[in-house]
Image (tube, rainbow, N blue to C red; front, top):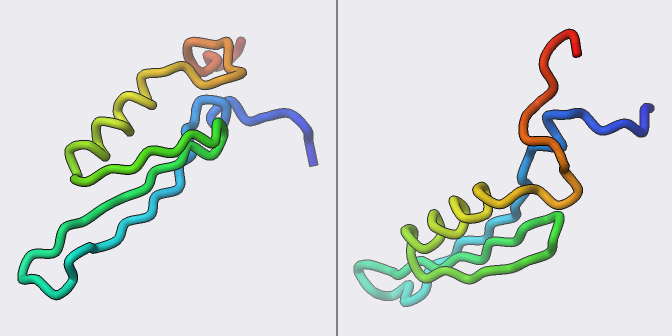
Length: 77
């Protein structure tokens, strides 16, 4: 098995996401989430879907730690 990283993996973000309901006995439970960036270990807790999506979008705008390229290598390079 090669120790080289696949360029697509170098450009990938990996998260774990946990979602759970609070106030289960009510007609409309509220949902909470925990999002963790697997590489950095950073954890955020969100109280609604817009907050969760905002954190994901923010993470996707940030460069991946250890990645110095701006894009995937072009074919033939």
